[in-house]
Image (cartoon, rainbow, N blue to C red; front, top):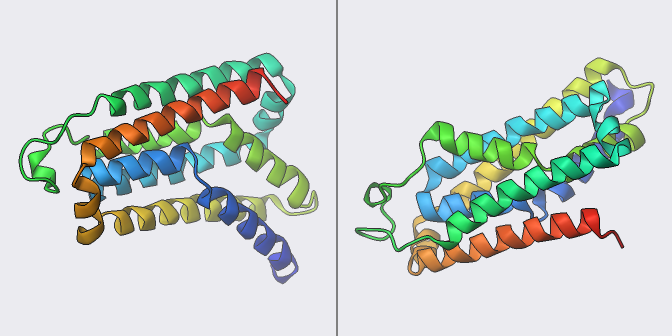
Length: 213
């Protein structure tokens, strides 16, 4: 294992930069944290982390390479992913002020169940074709062909856990009472802003796929 530490550190650094950059995962956790509270955002974060295993599996068994080398399949998955982001975005844009005392989850009858929040996070990340290509590149370029499969699995598990922990930490920070009270002062406007962000992400995804530079 010591011989693979430099490789692991390189992978961890690249993954940290990728997971910390704004994107659909960030937007959905941010929306859930502000709108529905800590527990809902954490369940969505766990769904995102679990979906990382999907991309790792794609890379290990070669499905990621198939997606990369088959334009129509890549475009089809992109349309599905963009459609899901549009679905989330238009729902957020129609958000109304919460009934009751601002900041109390009990006053929000539309809080998603844990399973629904987990599924939303899982689908948001799982349908992100760009994430699949990122992990494929990571496994093809950064990880040596001589690296044992067991180590590759460890790398994948690390990235899944690290992703979940990152977004769980974000969920906790965003739901600290002072921060959440500030955001919930005009919470539904913030929710609508997140809806616009999701729609813009969907548009960017489609344009970057069908109108490459």
